[in-house]
Image (cartoon, rainbow, N blue to C red; front, side, top):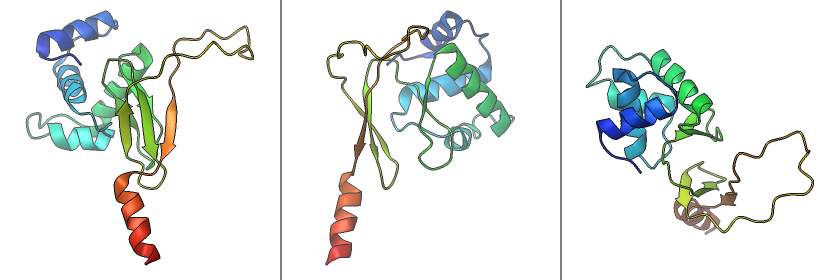
Length: 145
């Protein structure tokens, strides 16, 4: 994970994006937050220090980050756009009940799928695990008793 404003600015430039205050603030927060925040959560966390930052700007910034490959869009487990700003290779485990997303180290990559249509360009391979987190398992057990 990168740290600091100059690293964030370099990542923005490397992705072909203009360096702006809102983009720096959003990217810096994403680089520090391993919880795959939604646009609304990012907006709430940043608006104290950036009172003119609108939710619309956060959504547009995240969309630009996703298009450029700077962040990865996560499955919408709760109906809200979530992103992953951690820039090191990793996979995800997603709790099927609460929707919490957990980073896990990647496994060695399998052989490329032979059934992949030849007109597709494989950019990367990520594995997503369907899990029950500790809190949801505990809640299910207490409901059974």
